[in-house]
Length: 313
Image 1 (spheres, rainbow, N blue to C red):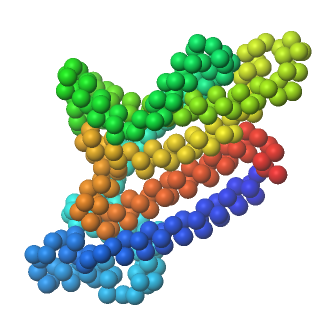
Image 2 (image 1 turned 135 degrees about the vertical axis):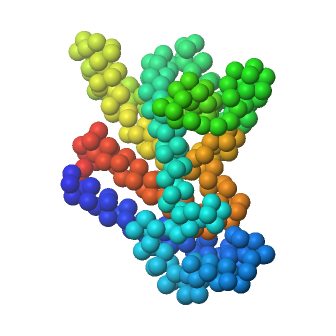
Image 3 (image 1 turned 180 degrees about the horizontal axis):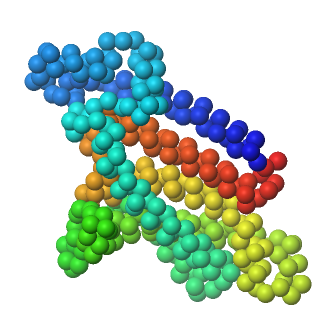
């Protein structure tokens, strides 16, 4: 198991190096002068040269990449031109907000989706299966941006039940935090519940037809034990894959929800950085998203091996 984990970590480091080079290359090839793009055309020559040298634009491309990668490993991404502060300080303020919403959505959607998927599979063809499957298909097709605008219109503008924007931490103002969290959390969670439900149902239907499940029933085991011990564990591999993809997607894909509800998270920060062509901030955000996705993939592979010992071989 230790050798397996070390092998996956080595592969992940190689992937991150390749991804970092692609990220740096793509952003370096953006059209126009990056200094003027960030600061505008009406800047002094002294300011221009200072930023030109800070971005290492006076050096060859490969040397610039190596210097940027070494700084990134040390956690130094330079200064954000749009926020006028260190990139690490910008991210330190905004990344926890995105992680807060992502983890809440993840830990709510997973158990609910698994329970609905089991119910739908066990009662296949019944009325409850039709209702759950129809609802899951509908919410899988609805994008987060559409749900955000819909909830904003219904609950904030029409019914005036919830605030339309902003975010505060629960320990600062608990009641206000709950009100500001409901709509964004629903937008982030409904799609996850739907996709986990569909995948769990599909996996369970495939497993409960197996011979060992029929054998367990013929031995007189309780139906709950057959479902949760013999069936669910063997049906979890595809679900675990989707869970890993879901968590990685939440960290990097919350920009639409954060933009609609004006939540100061990493997604909204990345949108503002792209709009302002803030190169140091864009590079840091995209690299952080890549790192999170890679780490989640490693954790997913380790969970695979824990759930199914055959994978360790």
